Length: 135
Image 1 (cartoon, rainbow, N blue to C red):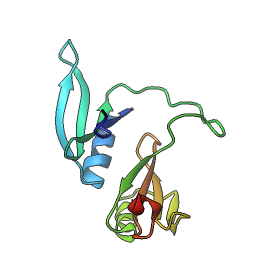
Image 2 (image 1 turned 90 degrees about the vertical axis):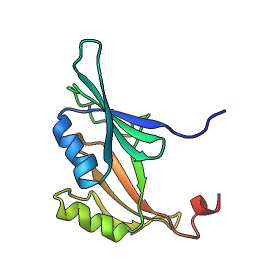
Image 3 (image 1 turned 90 degrees about the horizontal axis):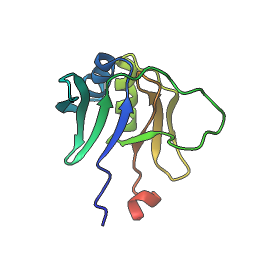
């Protein structure tokens, strides 16, 4: 019935900053744009891989209140070839790491950063012995 995850959507405060982050720094490509019924910019589609996208919606205004142990969406995870390469690239691009590269309990290597709106992003290099690789 379900084939895969098609997209993840974010409402963004500053589209130029978000496009620079996802396209300029992370290297994704802007796939296409959609306008609202009045012809105004509405959504920018960023291609992650074939059939998978990140939607960026114009007009985000209010960041949610930070609370301890919230229920709901936690983070976006992007699989990478090399955790050390992405960590160095992020830092060289002015993106601070919240967590430096480390190996998790699942044997995968990970580091963490945030996009311009504060959304948490995990970068993960899969280890051959990880449960994800064996599933």
